[in-house]
Image (cartoon, rainbow, N blue to C red):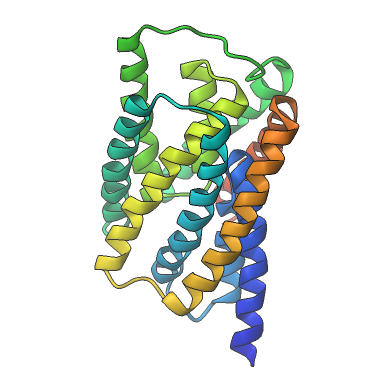
Length: 256
């Protein structure tokens, strides 16, 4: 009975995470800490591995909703997804052999700058702002996929938000386009991590599959909501998620 109630709570958490993540990323900020709290008897690596399944499920449904409305450059996007998949696999492998705690102070500073910049620059991500050459687009795409792919496998929380930020600031897309492309790349980083965690036997399928269904429903509804509301709403949501991520890393750096 206790396990059934715990699983119900995990599914509610997963739905909420999927909804938030579909809009601008950051679902891991909800799903990971709540799951660690509800499953204290399970090793952290196993919890993280298990959560990759609902994360992949929710991102899949959200990505489908976005791609229906936003027609991407498939050649560029497939390249990014392939690089991100391999990079996330590498990042997850690194997680199994070294600590990621040294990254948090750096991320805290970066997120503080991002939050302040987004708040004061009102037109940030409201329209397409750059026209890059094909070569420049591919250079940025490779760098984004490699760096954030490793980050997702190695640390995880806030990956979707970092992808959105990279697409807006470097590629010059608006928030809606950035959210669409971020979902596809994030799909690959999740899959890359899943492959490693399956090989390591770190996934509890009895927990992962019900959470996956809940996350998928949340992701589908969140993507529809974001598409309907548009860039201004996504900008505000992005700022809220970045601030929440900043507070989490601030707590980890200064109080843990």
